[in-house]
Image (cartoon, rainbow, N blue to C red; front, top):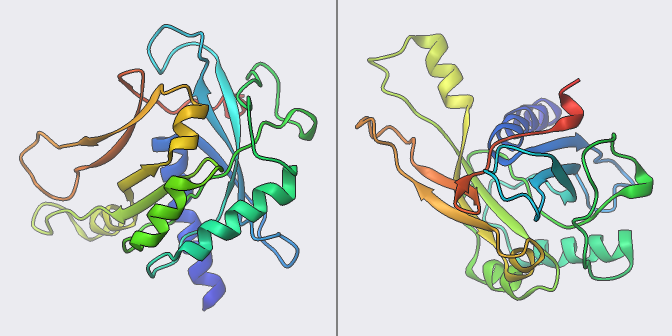
Length: 222
């Protein structure tokens, strides 16, 4: 039962990471995982790219992530992720966004960072958790995902199941270190639905230089 539940949350989180965050997740959790559940490439526009966020080649940022809990996240999770990054790389990250997307990823040219990619239906973070993440010297992206609900009178049973399983980004917290590392080009905006339905389609979104960050993962284009 526990294994089936874990697979369900992973299946929910991966599409959201891919389609809304431009992240490609790979499950690595195990007995010797060092506290990491996923490794990921986060595909972002190059700093020299003056066009919109969805065009041009992408650079990649290595993400270490843990799946979220269905309970409030304490500051101990932030401390654990800080330890994970230093364990993997031995020093605080700097000048990490340099790898281009014109060749497949390899361990030799990993760029690195730290992040958190949670599953849907999460509760809020403790205030101490946010304070710890915001003051950390490790780049953190804290996400809170929630399921999307639709009016039962407008969709059939199959559509309701699909809508309930789909994830929406409820909130995003980006700490100062990550913002500095990205050169201030990334920002979080609250997006509101204009369809008048009011059925949970509002949520947070990532924007790059004023434009919505579009998903683009070159290694998946082949």
